[in-house]
Image 1 (tube, chains in turn cyan, orange):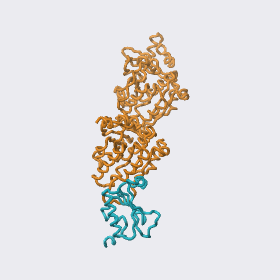
Image 2 (tube, helix red, strand yellow):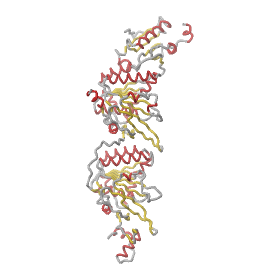
Image 3 (cartoon, rainbow over the protein chains, first blue to last red):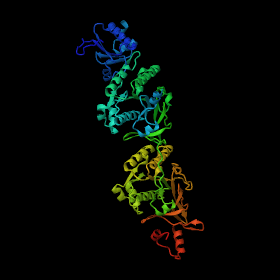
Image 4 (tube, rainbow over the protein chains, first blue to last red):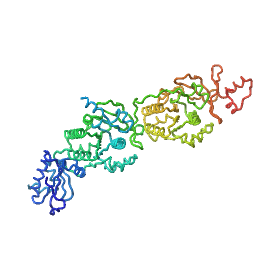
Length: 107
Length: 510
């Protein structure tokens, strides 16, 4: 599992995500792939993704009030934003991430 | 095969007496129970109470998952019912805040694996056996797809079974629709036990009822049973007949009036009930007071419950007919409780009376008047309450005297508002007899189960020396009362002069 170092301050404007998933579960695999695709497309050099397998760290998900898998939390830039689901509806994801309409259209 | 059959009927007691009665022992162990109800029905309180009771009585730790209400507030509510939440939360009880964050965005499908994985780890860590999912509809609404909602609910159901956990799931339903026509109408089909809580308003008083819709592998009471949320939580007024009937007593209990005792064959039987009916001002309270005084004089603990009149006034009024309750009140032998009839539903009154009986442990109880129960909150409910009160007293070996107002224009129409007369063991009626410009109180025994009773109409006399009945005095086929009787008595003694009133009262029948 790929883990980010929490103490490491990301570059200004960088996108930091935390993904709660079940390793190997179809929706989780799908969500992770979709998130990587969006990151590569929109902010290729300034993103970091932390992955938490809820079956390996069940109490952490409970403590973070994460109820469903997959759940993607955008930690940075503020404000924090929760997105639940396999991210198959890309428009919803982009809107939630606050990506400008123009930028989305240009891609 | 045999093993699975046994598992199906295994139950965990909820610690709520009436609830265990209607479910014949509690909730199905390691199964799912659904509690449904409209807003403010008491679903959360009931679920929390069961969790608290299991922790306290069976030392079974439990987890409370709150999807809607703030967990701190749920815990604070528990404190209000006198449950030591702080102590419980150290080991026995764990709250999970599962309220959805505002602004959460949904994109594509998902499932509740994260929650279940977390709960599984937590349950194992603390040894929890019971999990409450409060307001599961909030979580399901997030799925926004009936098929997915159903799938996730089955996932939950399976998860409980796999982990050998007992689940209580609460969900909202609209009050005016049948449970199965609701959005989550499939829930009762899935669950092993489905319970519907509802509340309705009758005559401005709210009444709550609980009904077990289904119970797999177990009998259950099919009827709607009233319940209240009292100071110690949910109390369910069960009315099934599982309690054994006590042996009938042959002992007699004095009515407090010697001549009335004689009329009913020596007094009321112990652990039976007596009904005294009459119109306003007939003296029903006086008879109730005498009965209670007699009990206190026999050194029996007693309880006098009055509606809409305070204890001080009753004591004062009774003192005018030489019935003195004050010393017994002071010694604690007697407890008087004044209740306001319009302040609560008949069910709440019943629960209150039940608590008073438990606290005072009386052998004799007077309730004056019982008809106050029917004033608000629906006659049918009040009637059921009256009946349960009768059975409660009988089972506890308590002799109880009820008074009831007859408000009919026609005094000949001898019925009571609660139809309590049908279950009354003894029924005494006080009426007014109008004769020759006088209005006298006439007492008759309409019914006295298990004993011979006098069928005569007798004059009831209140004086400052006490309460008594005049000897029956008939002349020309008529019962003579008041002045006519005295005149007749004197004439028979060969003394034409009218005796003094007090003398007549003290010396009647000699």
